[in-house]
Length: 344
Image 1 (tube, one colour):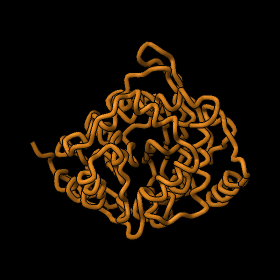
Image 2: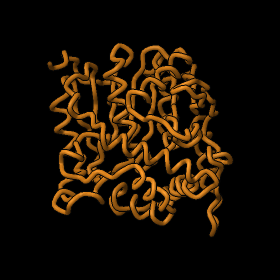
Image 3: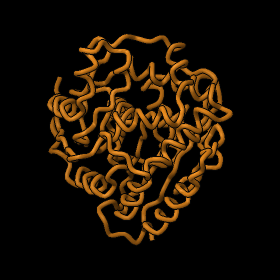
């Protein structure tokens, strides 16, 4: 049944292929997610905002390994919670409860006029949401920027995280230390405003998908381009500029040795996603973004860790090869590395 639901949603989401792509609302009004989206209303930094999330209850009929366990999935900067659809369906079928939050500034969540973005603040926001849902101890999975956030969350609340899975995570190299030039937030804002569907597709083709494009990827380009071209484009672009600054200035690699829980880094062998390559000198740009190598180096710093490499897959394995990704994700969860004390 779960696959019938997922297939029906996938067809509906991909259906109109118009010469002029659809434009959704500033909070993606008009774009249906595969599961019910709810809003968590809370106050942060003296303002009231809404975090969108999906909370998919465990399949009571399942006899899989997920009984009584909750998985939280965190998406990356250029992605929305809906991109986890196939993974949610697989985890649900295995008996897990699955929660998919969207951070402020993203997709169906509020876009603040101004916000002091930090990974610590986003981790606190996420914990408030999970506490409101009585999620208890969780298995935490983060993709790309969501991997940076997942690592920060695990460092701040280690007692809450039983296992950590980082999917092609950013933040495993210090771009500033490597020689990438810093751009002011106003400069980043100007660059964000230039994003269009063709520009997004060109970048993703090279950096995300290793030059291999499939029609199934088009819907995600349309979704992202809508946020950059619709009525809320300025607000969205400003938030994304602030978030890019956060990513650049707050690498997590220096604290990986403090991660106390079993950790798996799941990486595509073709992943070369490098968000700051354009502002790096050519000799620096050439050595950035080798994610398989970065994952192996990161794993050597984490006390209880291992790397799972997906051959022939790029930056977004949950979209590129969902069956293989789901198999690897369940393997990572069901057979975590042996726990060791974190290094000091």
